[in-house]
Amino acid sequence: MQEHTGNARTKNSVPLMRRGLGWWLCLLVVLFLVSCGGSPTEAEEPLPQLERVPVPTEIAKLDAYLEYCHPQVQILNPKPGEVLSEGQVTVRFAVQGYPLFKDPQLGLGPHLHVVLDNQPYVAYYDLDTPLIFKDLEPGSHTLRVFAGKPWHESFKNSEAYAQVSFHVLAPTPEYVPQPQLPLLTYNRPKGSYGAEPILVDFWLANAPVRESLLADLPRDWRVRYTLNGQSGLLDRWESFYLKGFKPGRNVMVVELVDGKGDPIRNVFNSAAREIIYTPGGQDTLSRLTRGELRAEDALGIVQPKPPATPTPMPTATPSPTPIPTATPTLEPSPTPTPTPEPTATPTPVPTPTSTPTATPTAPPTPTPSPTPTPAPRRQPRFQLSRPRPTPERIPTELSTPVPTPPPVVATPKPTPTPTPVPVPTPSQTLATPLPRVTPLPLEARRSIKQQGLRLLPPGFHSPADDL
Image (cartoon, rainbow, N blue to C red; front, top):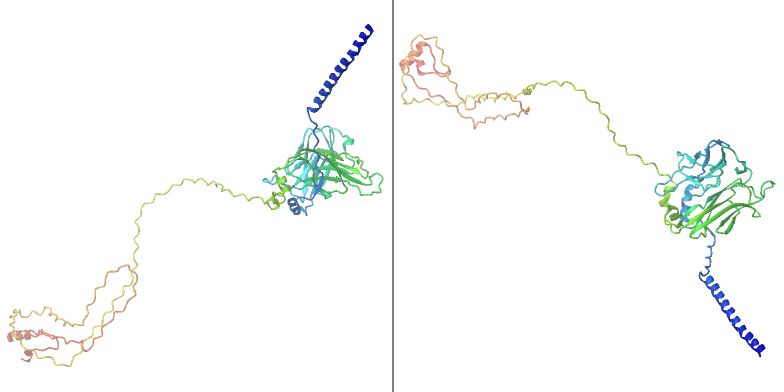
């Protein structure tokens, strides 16, 4: 019986152990599911497909204005192989056939791209301002420069590119490009963008002739570009526009490879850049890319505006200080009265007095008037010294008195108007009345006769004469 009981305990303990293990397994499963299910797995968004597209329309229109430009670029300083005693270099250039400027409103214009070693380029717009690189590491450095269009595309003519290597303190030959090998210079894309498509551009120096027979040169070459892990190949040297950038951070790698895809070894033949893409940018390049800014309104970035003619400001001419001179006191002098020039006063033409013509009419016989005549005073005898009385002039009706000339007055010289002379007509001719003769007493007549005096006008006689 003990053995069974014992057996019975043994049988009852086995299910209890199984139940405990089940609970532990369930707890472990729950913990595993909680740890895995707390943050659901996020599926990665697929990258945009890379696509090469034509040049944006407005940029292509502006490019036509630069079609005949052939820039010629030279590096004047530093000199090839120059050793500098400090970690700073001042760079100067000479450019012909391509004026450099920046439009102040649009912020773009023709310029140079200056690349130090394998760093991103520096845009250079003003030849009068030296370009200075500071804090250079000791060793060899290489400057590469080429002419760039306002939208940062490089010119491809050989004169548009220049290169020089110099040294700070001492040369390090391994960092100097080999002149017999192709050399790739990365240009675009670079920095931030606000619109697609985006320019992909580079400069290729010493590019070998395809299928070259020289053993020391690659028989073929390609340019491989990689954007966010997606790659493409170029079998010719040209710029192109690319779509497929994602908003935010992007990584672009450009490298020079041979026909098999292996890198062509030379300093700087590969480069990587970080690009930030923010759609909807309002800068000039983004607006041109989207077509919101027309080429006609952006000509200022390809054609320099004529300098504004400054308005000449009137400069104050220093007037000489007048030397005070003694001003003579002028005594008031009598104002000379202008003496009127005597004008010839027209002498009045005397009216010709018509002499009365003796009318054949017989004079009337004087009739003695009964009017008593007072007796004349008796004159003393023998007074011969007395002047004879002037016989009265017989007044005539047609005689005109001579006018008294007026005083001389300064008047404008009048034009003398002839005075019409009335011509006497027979009807107007009046008989001149004869004076009435008063007979003197006989005694008086005798006395007068004795004295030899005649009181009658000539032509008249008295009855006393007959005595």
